Amino acid sequence: MGKIKLLDCTLRDGGYINNWNFGRKNIKNICSSLAEARIDVVEVGFLTNKAHSEEDALYCSCEEIAQTANIDKNKTEIAAMIAIGETEMDPISLPKADKAVLDIVRITFHHTRQEIEKAVAYAGCLMQKGYKVCMQPVGTTIYKDRELLELIEIVNKLKPYAFYLVDTLGTLYKKELLRFIYLIDNNLERSIKLGFHSHNNLQMSFSNAQLILEYSSAREFLIDCSLFGMGRGAGNLCTELIAQYMNSEGIAAYNMMPIVAAIDNYINPIHLTKTWGYSAQYYIAAIHNCHPNYASYLMNKQTLNMNQIDLILKNIASEDKHIFKRDVIEHAYFRFQNRDIDDVESINRLSEELVGSGKDVLVLASGKTILDYKERIRAFAGTGHVIVITINGSYADYPGDYMFLSNQKRMYDIDYEEYGGKIIMTSNLPKVNSECIYVDYDKLADYEYEEADNAGLMLLRLLERVGVARVYIAGFDGFDQSVNRNYYDKDLINNVLPDVVEMKNASIRSQLKKIMEKLDVIFLTPSKYLIEEMS
Image 1: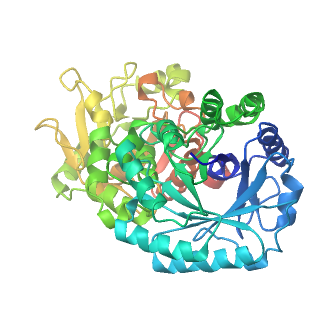
Image 2 (image 1 turned 180 degrees about the horizontal axis):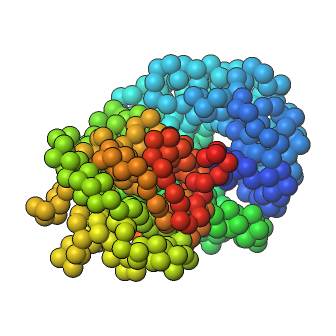
C-alpha cells in the first residue's frame, strides 16, 4: 500500500451543522490540536464570496486564513475548498501559493458539463499559481462507468495533486467500493493521489476506510475524516476512529490526545444543541440513492412515519435524487399529502355545531404549557360554555369535544374506540371511521410558507372557514431548541434539527399574524409566536 494521509474536514464539512460559526478562537484551537496530533492535512473551511464574519470558517483571501489557521507547517498542511455552485471564490483572485498559508485547494463540482469545465479551468489557474489541487466530483457513485472514465481522462491530462471518490449519498458497500477503487486506480495517472470522502448514512464509513487501507496499490491515498464525524446528515468518518486504527495497525503514529481533547472542548458543546449522525431517515435516503437533505426535509415536517418517508423518497425521479432540490421535495411532499375532496357538507355541519352552539371555542395544542397552566385551562374549559378541540391527539387532562387530525404520524397512536368525542380529519389521512368529519387538506394549507401544513394553523383556518369569530388557544407554544420542552408528553417528542427550529417559529409566526387579521385568537398560555411582530 502506498502512503496514506488523513485529511480532517471538520471546519469545512462540519460547518454545515453550525453554519461554519465555530468562533475564531475555536478555529485556531482546533487547527493547532489537529497539527499537534500530526494529522496530515487540515481543511480550514471554504474559499467563498459568501458574506461572513471573522468568527466563521469561511474565507475570501489567504490573509483571512493566515489570521485564523494556527498550524505548525512542519506537522501538517493546510487545505481549503472551492465548491462550484455555492457562491464560490474565483481562484484568479488568490495570490501565488504561499507555503506559510495555504497548500491545497480542493474543488468540488457536480455532474454537469458546465461545472466540470469550470472545475478544470479553476484547477488550471490554481496549479499555475503553485497550489496542489484536489478534483472532487460530487456524488462520484452516480457516474456511469463510461462517464467516470471520460472524467478520469480529463483529469489525467490536467495532472492535479489528487482525484477523489466522493460517496455523497453514503451508499457504498464493500463490493461496490472496491469496484470503484479498481476502476479509478487502474485508469488514473500513477502520480495522481486517490482520495476518498464518505458519508455515514449506512454506517459504512469506518469499515470502508479500513478496506482502503487494506487495498494493495503503490498509489498514495487521502482519506477524509472529521472530529466525532461532524458533518450534515449522518456525518462523516470519525477522525479519532480512523487515526487510532491506523496507529494500531502500525500504518501511522498520530498523537491521539490532542484529537480527543479537541472533541471534548470544541465539538461536544456543539453536539449538545446541533445533532448529526446515523438515523433511520438517512438510512432510507441511502437505500433509495437520495440526497440526505431530502430525508432531513421530510423528518423536519414531523407529520410522516417511516413508511411514508420511504414511499415519498422511492418515487422521486432518478434524475432528481442525487442533488438536493427543494422544489422537488416540496412538490413530492404536498402531492403525497393532498387529496382534493368536496367538503361543503362538512363545513356546513361544523358551522352549525360550532357557531350555532353559541359557545366559545377552545383549541388545545400539545405544548408543555398545557401542563404548566392546567388550572387556568380547566377553569376556563369547565364553565359549560366552551367547546374544546384538541389537536392530533386526546389529552388525558382534557377529554375534548372534538379532535382535529392532520398528522399521518400521530394518527396511529390514538385509541379511537376509547375516545368519546367527534373526529375532524384532513383529507391527507385515511378515514378512521364513517362518522369522522372529513375536510379538504389543500384548502387549509398555505403553500406560500415553509410550514405550510402546521396542524394548529390548519385548524385555525378551518375555524375561520366555518364562521367562528373568536378562538381561545392554549399549548400553542412554539418550538424550543431543547426538544424536551416542546411537548406536554415525552412520547410526542420529535427529532427536529436545531437549526430548523427558528425557521419553523418564524414561518408559523408570520402565518398566525395573517390569520389573526380575520380571526380573533386569544392565547391562554405563553407562546413564542407572540412577540413584537404580532403587534
